[in-house]
Length: 337
Image (cartoon, rainbow, N blue to C red; front, side, top):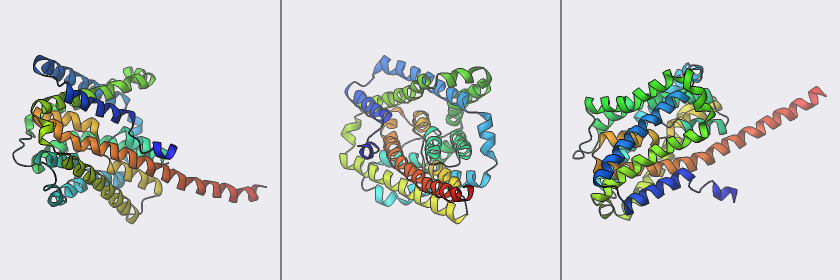
């Protein structure tokens, strides 16, 4: 049963599915939709304020010196993934709608996650301080790089707003609250740490609000009449393929460059992740409301696949480390007797 449980969706994924279902059956319209958009903007600001308040400056400084590791993670996130998205275009275009393919490209230019990358690295006994630094740097750089890459790669006709004005709005909505939270950490950091479980609902709630608002607008425009089931299955398969390629390439390059097993674990997990927490709010700024729903679908599918696969991989890394410790202890025992 425990083995099967690893492949079941987590609670947050189930809530995402429930939110999409609710938006499909009862979409927000008119004044309700306008009110939801205002509430969503405030919730996103709160989300990034809390991220800033949680991030320890000491943790960042502890890993910032490992520049080779960080460069490899950033190259995987913002170079390898976009190249893979473009390379898969001949396979994807006959199978999915143009908007879904835009969603796949958008997935490929998103930054890495913070929480799950760090948690999985810790579970696998990897280099946690370096993972904290790499994942955090990826998130911060993504605020600037993702809109630029969207402007370069987006399929013509979808009118992604990656102008300086859009970048400015992203900085205002995401970066300013983040910096404010970090600057206020000496005063609010203790409260954030003591109430981590309660504040987790703010994190997840803000994402659910964005998803509900985005899918409501898409449903009103006829989303589910435009997306065939075969296209959704194709996106799920391509998401799994993207993850497999990212895991394989990052692990192979890290080995060739002589990184330790602890560093390779951090590289593999930070370099293969894509952030739904950053991706959904930025999509809300970069794309028209009616297009956000289908564009974030690949992000949501990839999110669940990466959690399930990487959880199993982290446990495998941890099991491989345990026999070495046990052997070392057994070898030391006769000498101390």
